[in-house]
Amino acid sequence: MASIHCAVLDLKRLDLLANGNSTVHRLDARAKVLVTLVFILCVVSFNRYELTALFSYFIFPVVIISLAGLPPLFILKKIILLCPFVLAIGIFNPVFDREILIHLGPLGISGGWISFASILVRSVLTVGAAFILVGVTGFTAVCQALESMGMPKVFAVQLLFLYRYIFVLTEESSRASRARELRSCGKKGMGICSFGSMVGHLLLRTWQRAERIHMAMLARGFTGEFHARRQSCFGTPEIRFVLAWSALFIFMRLQNASQLLGMLITGLFP
Amino acid sequence: MSHHIVEVKNLRHVYSDGTVALKDVSFIITHGESVGIIGANGAGKSTLLQHLNGCLEPTGGSIHIGHTPLYKGTLPDIRRTVGMVFQDPDDQLFMPTVFDDVAFGPLNLGYTPTDVERRVTEVLELVGAGHLRDKPPYHLSGGEKKRVAIATVLSMSPDILVMDEPTNGLDPFARRQLIKLMRDFKHTRIFTSHDLDMVLELCERVIVLHEGEVWADGSALEIFGNNKLLAECRLEVPLSMQGCPVCGTKSRSAGGACVIEGG
Figure 1 (cartoon, rainbow over the protein chains, first blue to last red):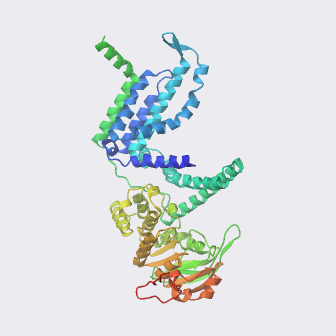
Figure 2 (figure 1 turned 60 degrees about the vertical axis):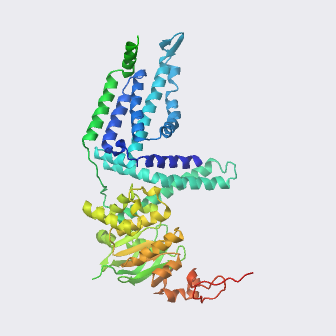
Figure 3 (figure 1 turned 180 degrees about the vertical axis):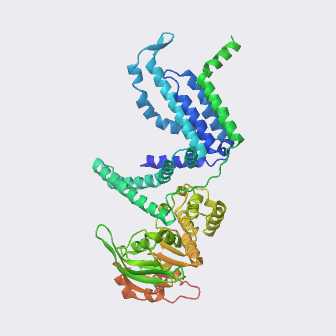
């Protein structure tokens, strides 16, 4: 269960990163959410064989990570965690799509491999952008920004509660699992049966806790309206941030920036 | 008319699985009293507390808070009057940051943002948690969580403070801080606890619950002096009233400690 525990500690670390005080941290959350949305939309809107144009998009994570002083290795590890899922999605492309698209000397590369690489690069970019967004903004602020941009309040509150209690729940489950491990003396215990009842117990406990939390909310005058403190201003720095990045993303979507750069270099040094 | 009177008449509560948690409980707690409700596990303490601000509905009997009967229509007012601190602070702290959590009650009461800011700062300073205001609750230690949980209730300026096992899981220092904080609160206080020394320090009156009934109701010293009653209710004399563990006598020297002789 050490892995669950470590994962939670890592989540807490990501959350603590948001307490930083860089220029990016100080920007209004809505600006960062907007830019990240434009970034993700641009990245996913390329056709499936596009690869070179995607590389220019790495400028965004690189710039933000260095401006905000986030630990790049930490973010990279978080992204690698998701790689198995991406591999599972893309692994059949090379099998089904065998049409050769590129010849590198004697080596022919099929469309399947290119689309597989494209999926990989896209997921690294989008997942990385999401992690960076949380790292420079904080999960709560992201939720509040989404809500102020029109996401229904119910979803925002749900997300906030999910984030608040994910720590309590993982602690509870790691305690239950540790107790099981200690008493199964290194063997399988009762196998899947004991896991079934453990999950059931966890669900019931969650239920009871939800009831107690609701009581605590009622005891403090909750009437269905969720008040939260807002102190944000969408000023000139935010407008500049949104416009500059969005313009760059859209430009890179319409023009293959990597190719342009290549042409520039080969043009300069023929 | 005082807002601070709690009157419980023939209260009875049966859970949906048929467990009779409270058989017939009656008492009156007047303005400014500090009352400890003690009893064995399963005696009905927590069930009783949950009735005091309408978290549970009585099966029989009635509750009046400040001469207002407790029923659905009066619940919002009563919840404003009775501040309830739950046993597990994780149930009480549900907002993203400590500030938001303490501000939750005042915002629901319709305070203006400036008032909320002032009130939250005041209360956090009072419980010694001013430096925690921007932290998320899951980054706090047990003692810090407890203090913030108390702040969330104090921020609504309740007339009656109800606490379920307040010193549970606290280290001696945090426990001492909490006792001091509670002593400074001047309104009606109701505690349940197994920490009988805390009850002895804070409460002049003690109500003993046993199997869903009031077994005794009187001054703390009187009840803690009654060994037979305590044994019947699976309780014992608070440690501070017991003999010295070294010499076995109840009288202490002027220095307050016994001298252990060599050997």
